[in-house]
Length: 336
Image: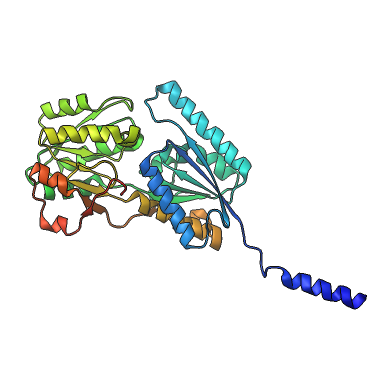
């Protein structure tokens, strides 16, 4: 009898898997669900998948998306801030292995609570890390790291001048988004160094873009620059589509300083949001699988700007972009 029991125990042990697969838990926080954020999220998740961390297999993801699409007054903005902090509290209660924040507001207003709880934090789609509470543009500080989509206005305006050598005045329309306001102000100074005048107009997030566009056209702009601004992605890219319809009607080219949006710009210059998400994914893998502390990982950034072109827009406006730019450019699609 004793011998039979020993044999049964051996069979049971041999029947067990050689190891128990680790189950990872990640919580995601973002304010508003727009395509550019989805691109970053997809890049993040795909990178995890290539490294063996797969949702539905060994990964559980909890997404927290705060709706804040329309214009908000000061009290509504305070309400959004409280919603972020409340969501951060729920995330802390979930005890995830890592938190991914998408965008500046989600990162800025949740980081203290999440980091204080000892949960590693990685961000993506943040234009200015310092504005999001980081120590510098390259160091996030204790418990945190991430990837920035910061672009130097001087660099993109230089490319715009190559494409449109006769350009003298650039129009920029933006909302009160911190990233967009900062870009417009920085662009004014850096464009002046290249002999370009920038005129800007701020609108509310629920405003139609048409009146602002016509006002800048009356001021003599010979090109529109579309800044990194969530405003353009709202309501299924309605502001972007409306602006581009106006620019084509008035035979004025537009260049987007981002690689997403609607067809109609002659060029789209900037970091890829999907690539930005991939960089954040690589950072998350180091934290989850290698045990690296977030603060030991520098803030990531796409080394070379992506350049896309809409050949239909070039033909419609009768613009010949220099071959040196076209050789670097890839075709634009609205899912870029």
